[in-house]
Image 1 (cartoon, rainbow, N blue to C red):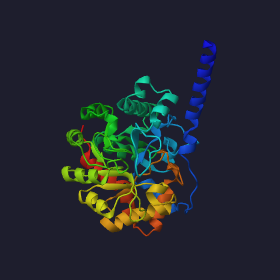
Image 2: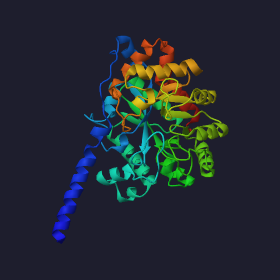
Image 3: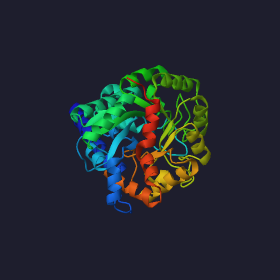
Image 4: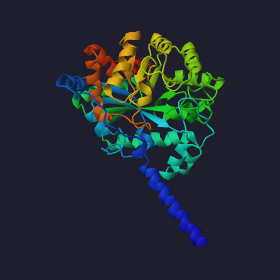
Length: 385
């Protein structure tokens, strides 16, 4: 009987592992979307600009990101092919089963726990969201080492200068900045931000799909604002010069944060209700409020964000922001590898540039959207060495 139980357990664990390793093929899909091929003008612009994407989640899945994969959306070869100079890597620590943009209960079973078990993460990550973030940050550090000088971590303003200089010598050099998707990664304790900072994290999204001990989510049950712990966290982040990310935040959280911060914020990956009206996306008033503080809004590249997956859908949302608040506040925030289906992967980003130019935006505006706006905010917010 014991032997039967052992065999059954091994078979079950083997099946779970196989399913876990294959799940990305189903959740991070590319279904080719219509759109013009990049022209020579576009390719030249893509090469000369510092293209920045404000959000992608490839560290969650366990692929070797130094090698080109046939699944998912992001790895270093595809970032280089897409002309990306700086990628923000999100660290995801909890996603309830059935998470949705209208109402998500944090008590539902957690899919990241299942992923941690099936992908062989350290046992300490099975019960601690903080440890999950630190585990993914360590994976990022290994990627830096394995890339042998072609992938640079961005933690200070001076690192931005080093990245620019390195890309002038070799356009294939890519920078990476670590961000937390949801402050629940702090395991309820705002002082844990010190561990994340020491691990290289420089941006924190206050909420993800559900309300947490720090802030309300646009998709939560109560959708409240900043809590007392959340205000402490904002202070701790300000002291360390970490960037505040309002992606997924409730209307009350957005208002509360903008009332207390004295530096630009980002919304790393979102859409706007002016072109795609749903609870996931920002209202025109929210866009104006974020822009008034010098912030930037990263436009996503999946259906819920822009009501489509074509480059033209992204360009339409960017154009709306530009017409509403000017060229200084729109950016790219793909949400690649975030359990979304897109019309192209990171290598296809020049198609977005083609669509931006095709929408009639001047080249100076397109350069700002591709990266200059984000670089301005990072230069104003990141710590010095």
